[in-house]
Image (cartoon, rainbow, N blue to C red; front, side, top):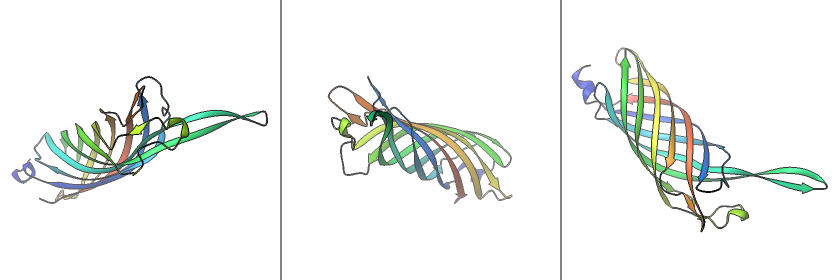
Length: 195
């Protein structure tokens, strides 16, 4: 690896789908997965042959669903209630690399700070009105994937990554329990070496 790569900076954009649910300490009122989105803008720096740091801003949704059974005209029906909140998250991941020619594989781990963007501090479902949503949560992020560098100059790359984010502090609390968000995502990415 040349000297310029050891001090390189890579700017990247990624976006994809996410599956999210809320984990309760006692019961699971929002334990069913919902499909959401995520989009990230990040910069990779302090790049070395086998590791780097990756800091990003991420817009994502967190939440979950529950199903109620109701009787109407002697027929049972299922009502699915989804709850979701949009967050602006910032994280810094320590990434390990396996580099081979034009393709690189990576795995990263680090903390994230999640700031809820909605003004309401409660769920929409009347049965969940006892919960209060936190404005800020701390979490952990784990991700991995690969990227492919285009051309001999290795300035532009395309990639695919997957990951998980788990709230380490409660996203919602009630008198009897707390809920933490858990989401899994898959995203495509494009990056450009700027230095």
